Length: 277
Image (cartoon, rainbow, N blue to C red):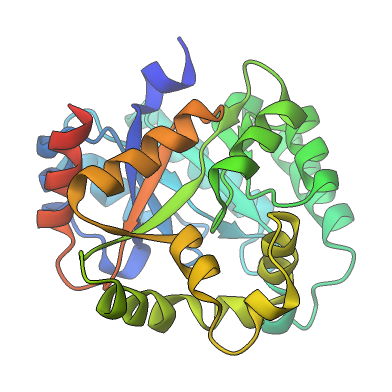
């Protein structure tokens, strides 16, 4: 089974604190087959369990479990508990978080490799775990030791680079933030309110530079060009087109985050219709 067959063409990204059973059922009904839980889900995977219980066939993925906040052995034990009840419906996305938010974040690549060692020892299959990989060394680790990558705040050109780095058969599942608003001024206001804090985090600023943006683009609240590329705005056909752009560049699956947070369901339903989910 291909990754697209397993996860669907498009999924939904939602903070773990905002994802409840009703929301999961609604997106499943709309045609989405995977829900990615952001905001560093806990290693007990209690929310994952509840969402899987509430749905028929939805896959739930963590996007991502922070290796500094969640014990690897505990996560592995939780993984086995969940898949025993819901086989084939869990993906563990893991990552090393942000230097600014995690004082103990030292040598994150080595720490991630050690974390994967524990998952290996405790029998978590390679194909059920992915890394949030933004740079070439983390992409290489993802290719060698996981099922693929779930990058955050990237553009289609970076999906192409990830595909080239990982090769065929590995998952490339970028997150794409969208704003349903055809007024560029108000849409950029919404996008900047969301994106501003990320521009001040080293790992995302570095990734954005790799995408071809400059220090001028990153300054203040971000240039219009940067904002428009990272947080796509417009009518539903435009938002659906950016999902297709990632797919055309080599992504297997694109997970959609709607801003502002509010009630994203009308936007998600509109995108689902455009994509024919």
